[in-house]
Image (tube, rainbow, N blue to C red; front, side, top):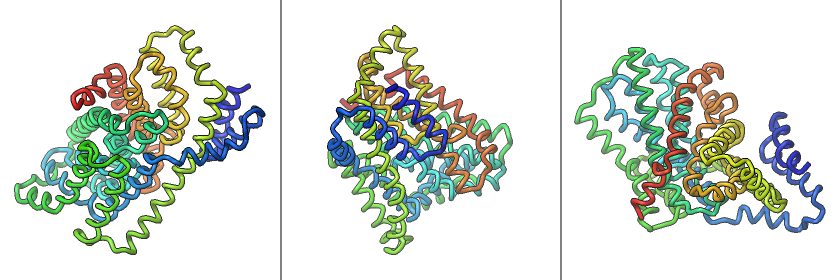
Length: 425
């Protein structure tokens, strides 16, 4: 009966289209009704305690920083710089999408923000160059997932909070898997362009590279400043998020002069809605996770998996399948907050490094964001560029298959994610 309430009821409500925060609250209330011995006065402590976290403050700040960069000219200059370097190659526009998404990921941890910033600049040129709506929409939706792996990553921050792991260590561990996804996407773009004889763009010249580099200098400095400050011990990830907001605002207002104080206020208000959605989910998921933990479900899951006597590779495959399915229906913050406390005891019992598992979980949920039929990135591209959903489903399938291949490689070769940690001591 307990399992039916905590796991069966959420699935039923999700199929009925109930918002995820409402599902978590409704299931939590049902759990409280079933367990009369649980003190009701603890509910408010758990809900507000879920939000009382210094690392959690990084999430709204990185969202705001990414939004300012997207509207204040930093993202556009970054895209122009990438284009000036890869121009003249068959598939250069597609490569620009991959490169820009990777670089934008080093400034903001929001996948949807990356899609908006990169897509608004490059979707129409891609279409006009002969790539077609299927490829253009698919590659923008698919490369937006790279943003989640390249630090600073909002899902990694949430996993660090939920699993009580070091956020900087997670950032370091995510670099190589994120770059692997970018390389695979770039190879696919080049193959597609050659196979379909996409016309080549104008060849780059040293003069154009110099001009674009000069214009993008402040944009290129942002990821160096943010990530370098974290790894250099100058500030924490949360402080880095605050620095990113101030940096983006000052550069957009006084150096590029593309954003007035009125525009900054409008951008802040727009970001506020997304921040609110995430924080409501965090509060509701905190209550749900507390109830699941107090009822002993994680311990029962560990015993169940131990009794199966499956080798670790099969259990990891089972986790991957489950996370991919969940990721295609549930947004990464909610999925991590619900599943990380549930899975982590079983993972540590198997001797799997929690940092490595954090990368596996993040990769699965990143891929889930553009997995048909309900991937969030798919709906973002559909809403922004009016690409029909059936067209988008076909467009994302090649990258979906390639990314799952990278996921399997990272899952079973933990050195890919952990080697950088050992290298940096």
